[in-house]
Length: 276
Image (cartoon, rainbow, N blue to C red; front, side):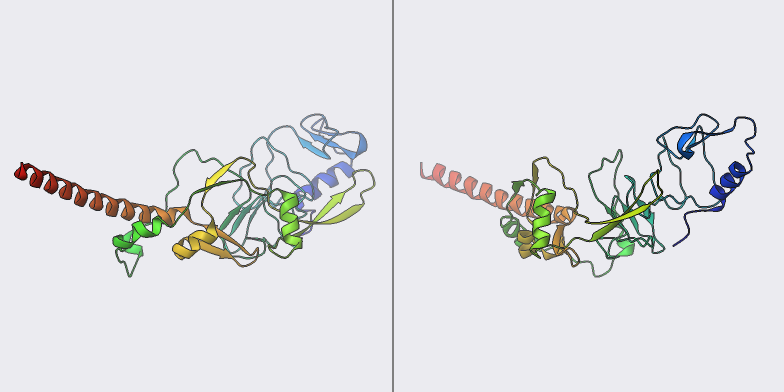
């Protein structure tokens, strides 16, 4: 793993050690706090009033706070102790809000590289999400058997449910029913500089609101194509988008049945009118 001291930060240390402050551009406060273009802030070792540009990497073993961050590479906290955890791996995999090893190797899907993007937590997208679906990219294209779609959809049962909390999920892990990764957190004492490592179970946080959806185990019995198994955590996930074409064909089949019933009704009405 790259040393936390890079060229940009080393330059600051050299300037401070030679007492070259360029007027009041760099100010040293109590407890070795430093302010650039302004006064130091006691809660941060280094506080920059304004924009920060580095031609080399910025690696932090603590917390990086900014009103806005523009990047073309990686934002990472190797100790997993920060609130924002984003990592871009050489395999073009991206993780947000998930853990990685102390050597900065991203643990996608709790340790696997089966996902290009994994996000822990909820999110809002102001705009559309588009999925590539051009016929140019596909082969072996066949129509779904709409005569069987309605019967299959009838086997699905919508549910309302609550996600289990972290304590309950931890118990499932202890019972061997699910598997979560352990995360090593390194905390640095600001006064002594002593590094303290803590190992904890990285249990995901699920929404606390009432949910509406399907049960993956039930869907797998009817539409296995819509369900994926996470072999690491030993859990199942549903691709709800996959069910949209199924519902389209089921509605079309239902409409055909309704049309047939209308024809039968009209025929019965005509027959009764003839008897009168």
